[in-house]
Length: 284
Image (cartoon, rainbow, N blue to C red; front, side):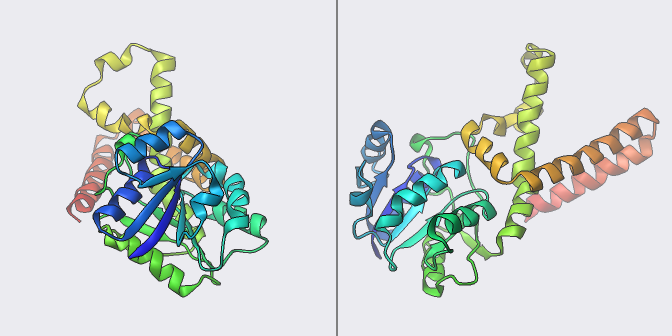
């Protein structure tokens, strides 16, 4: 059992991490840190954290691990803030949706990638944000990708992996380049599609949503996700996201051309293959 964990940014993911570890009885004390005291007080009232403080020196005192669960664009400021209080025995980790940019920021702040900085990304979430949406079972049967640098301390990697596994997560280790490309395709691109669909509808016909049925509701669900978080993801993983947007545009152009040239058999084949791929994925 870990004695003390500090969570910077007690929202959906940070709060769920805290709640999951408390449920799994993996930590004695969880301290929340942030700028919004009202939110931190709410987290304590909900028993997501045991304590909270607006003083980073108190938050990190004797901490065994600090988890950064804030939008990626805040990382440079946060790492600079915690740098004076980090010890060689304190593990630093995060839950950011991009890994390459976070590793580069850490190298800028510390002058190198600290051996005890173990980047991680849980492939889980909700369209709702805030500590009120925190769920102790959010990571159960979900995948968590860890992207340690070559100099990473092995014991730190094991410790971070063990914490996520205690909440029912499956761990996969890969490099940051592969992570950012895969997530741009499977997570970042779908969010761009949902956001752009809503943008297209409200700019074309604001009343169109009144006539939308369940399929539209399902497809557009993730457009309710946190705007600041997704803004930061786009800014921090631009090349991969743009690459996959352009790739998706080619698929749309192919379908548009099949419709324009009246090729029903070819259209049906595209739909059959798509349905089969998704059905197989759902079964796993």
